[in-house]
Image 1 (cartoon, one colour):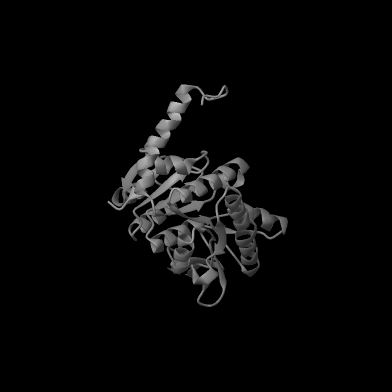
Image 2 (image 1 turned 135 degrees about the horizontal axis):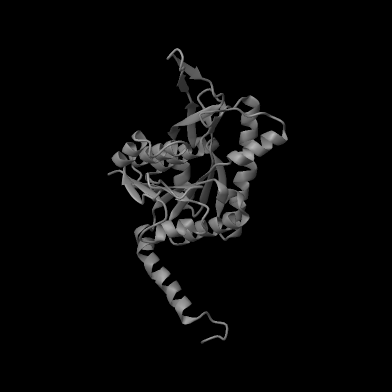
Length: 302
């Protein structure tokens, strides 16, 4: 029955067109795992965070199995500043001493993780918060970096403290949760062979988890549109060889390099495709997954 306040026919037709376009992708991705690295501005914006939670619930309801790995650099920085603990960065990585790693774990596994879980549950989903320490999910080794001294050409080993990189991801716990209709939300904190707690870069953690799950997609939500060419135009798709070439010639530079390298590593380890995309756009996940052209830059194995 028609209603007086019904939308105009053109609007209804547009909505029907969106649903018709999405249906083949819903069928294609039913039962597939998508690992989503959630971070950047989207986490700090209340409206975007709420939209993200609703989108995650929708993905679950149409048969996709989302696994979320989140960051929290700005929130960690704010808490350290509040506690008057100074932070030092080397090559974009936070030097993490014993006092700092306790704060990092408190912020990531505590307030941020529970905010995301609560938002998803409020939107009608069933989310559970984890860190890499739970159930032996993520074992890590101490991250070692070197820097070549410009005057002596000698390589110096940099000590980043309690900063780690994944050495092993055990997917058993995540397999159990996703099959039980639960959405895992993971803080990138891991435990080393020495029993110590380590802070892990969220992009790196998401890539390792996606590989262990043999995920269909690794979706990296960032504060940029994607990978740009030298003319500033978005590159919608590229293979691993092309991505490496763009790093070598300087087209991909700065903070985008480790993101692209994580994506390359994932697709070379059984992830079908990795996507670097703008998390600042409302419903960016739905646009990327359920439309023909997507939203960001997809990196494929070939």
